[in-house]
Image (cartoon, rainbow, N blue to C red; front, side):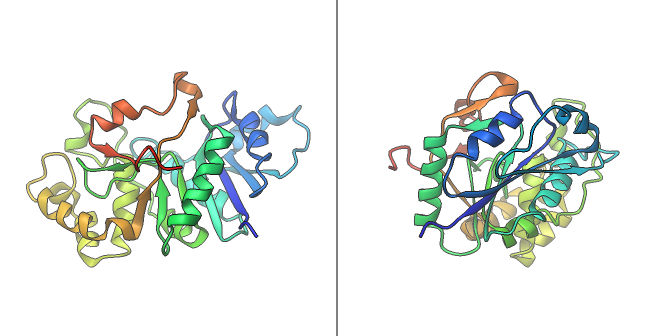
Length: 254
């Protein structure tokens, strides 16, 4: 019997978000869909009827985004995951929709290649250590719970193009935190990002060494998917991210 999963769609309610939730409800392996958003978004649901498989969770918007909206992601993801009951949970963004056939492919891929408690993501960084892409996290509920136990970031918002020499990149902040729960060395790097993780850090090569030793214990990468990234009116930016060192599973996987 195919294992049921829960999906958490986190973020503000975009024009596509409700349609995306109902779209995913057509998948027979999806049990529950939790839309985790903000108290300020309630008014957008005034004329929305009750939806099959879909429930809403509302959180108070944090006063500080933490750089790259990472605190928004931590809070809305954590509160959404707390409403899930199945052993496998998928965290997704509220401004994106993956086509159903590719969602089915991702489910088959995950069940074929999962080995332990690792999570699967759309892309993994090679130019930046401890850097999963944060559009999708697909894996054991307990792993996603651990990931979003990440402390809220105190880093300032991004205001200049060279922010990554003095600030965490948002996906790296999440990834480095998760790897820090798996390795004492990674924890030391997470606690000392200026020396090990920021662009141009003097000891970044040491972070890469540990990253490549433990990479698959934390995250593994999916094949490419067809996505509608509604906010930008395009698909997932594979060419853009690949130019920055992001890698993907063999595109020929069926």
